[in-house]
Image (cartoon, rainbow, N blue to C red; front, side):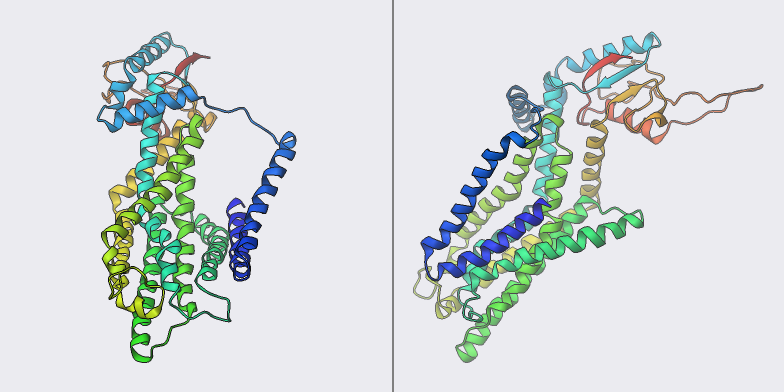
Length: 437
């Protein structure tokens, strides 16, 4: 719903402002100013009616997490940052279970171990966000090279120019979002299929590559038509590039927002979303700035200046080479997201985050609740967290009547996943407090 309203507002503003700007730039830009002011007034006036939840985090935990993240980036391991918190947790766990009691592992909000685990999750968000950089480099061209290309094309109907053509992206997002959300994903769900996150990124990068490829074809057509007749080509040739970019947004950008929120630490959802926005929006723009500076000779006419706003000067430049670089970048992004090891790593991060969001209950039936995990045998064999023999798990023994040995029931997948989650240092929220039931 939020995305629909965002694109709807973008479409309305994208149509009204350029048309009015032909008559008066001041009046045109006073419209978004007035709309923003009205939004602020409504927000303040209706604040007493809003349901305002208490913030889940605090500045101290955020700073601790950022400090731990900086240490990880400088080469320290999560276990080193956690210090003795981990050993203290396992000692409490061993003391509880040695007395035959049931213990619950709940994730607390403080301590070096939690800061280290949260930092590791934020680092995973950074890595995953980088998988969308290739598409976002292509996406950033809508406000730059696509506009430059559109300025040397023929305006349609007297008012549809490069600025208005940008609205094809918003229309594409609305249409693609409707089709994907109402038909594609439900179809996959009916067949018990789920598209991997990296495959969504790959599809987004594929549409980005199609968009750049279409712009590349338009580039060659601009040159060929001008050389033959001296005329311009219609601005409608750019529509294909904008449509494919809009379709790619549904798979790349929307998915990046979703996964960043899903795997983020519970108390730091806003921080995680901000990090994702920076690496999906800010970093690609910095890359585009560097690319332009490195390739600025391609944007110069025969006189040696960058004034290529008319078709004659534009055809003297080598903008086509820049489009080839963009095409290679988007293809590279698509290939990276199709690598099996990358796919499996992202899937494991999502699985661990889902497991981390639930408490781990020791000594109860696995099937009693999806939020509970069963551990009935716990023995401490090593003080090192990395040791996979730290805990021994098995489900509750089945009821047995009669003579002979009782049948053996192997641990369920849920038990093994929970065991792996607690044992391995790389798993996200593995530290916490022990509460006796």
